[in-house]
Amino acid sequence: MLIKENSSILIPVDFSKQSLIAIEQSYNLAKFTKSKIIVMHASPNSNTEHEKDLEEIVKNITKECGQPAEFLNLKGDIFELIDKKAEELGCALIVIGLDTQVRFRSFLGGTNVSKFIQHAPCPIITMRSKDSRNNCSNILMPIDLSAESREKVGITVQLAKYYKATIRIVSVFSPNDEKYENNLLPYLNQVKKYIKDRGVECTNKSIASNSPAEAIVTYANNNDIDLIVLMNKKDLSIGEMIGGATSIKIVESSNVPVLSVNPMKRESISSGIH
Image (cartoon, rainbow, N blue to C red; front, side, top):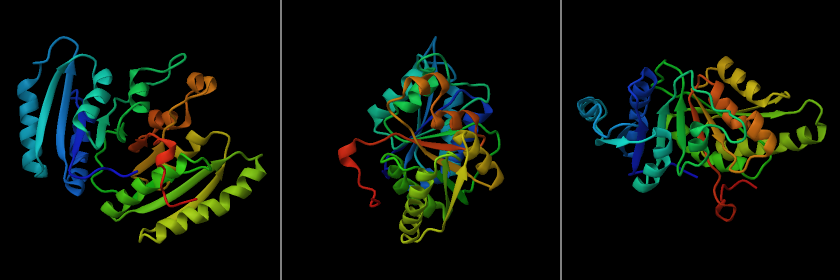
């Protein structure tokens, strides 16, 4: 899977600092992919609120980024509208700033936020930090032995080439699962070779932990990571619905921006790694 070029990047805004930072941090990606930036605002009461503010934002985008921009002002719940609009517009990417107080998990199914991420028609970058990250030097790619996990390799390589970044591969395994660990090492080396053969610098690291989300976020914080690339799971077990899937836990707790990618249909997989 790759981010489409010559398309659109959809950015929901509520005028919080996080949402405005998300706009600024989309500039480089918009330039790399030659994409239009679409700013989307929604209110439960009206489709005319903040009209002048949105016009000003679009004007600033055109001036500062140089890419075409427009806005949508809609009535309704922003998290219920994002996926629908992204699909209607054929967007290549959604970039959204999340307030640090937003939490995803609720009993059996999560909130509108987690549902919109899991059902998005395109990759999503979520940002919680109020710090602007204009550059991207290190991209963290957690990986496991599942078929779905390898699907994010292509998009990670694409981003690394855009930013001239290094890919840091990390895999977390249970300290008591020796068989999984033994299968993991040759696979990590295979993925690393695949990435290096495409001209991208790459390292790999395996971590023994029973708390994969915590281990990945800790690694990101300790190694100057600028972006984490994750693969979501479409179908969650009952345990994951109650306790939260690893990918959602990472999005919820990470101050580092996270790119979430939903799995493709199984028959369309073609990563080049087997």
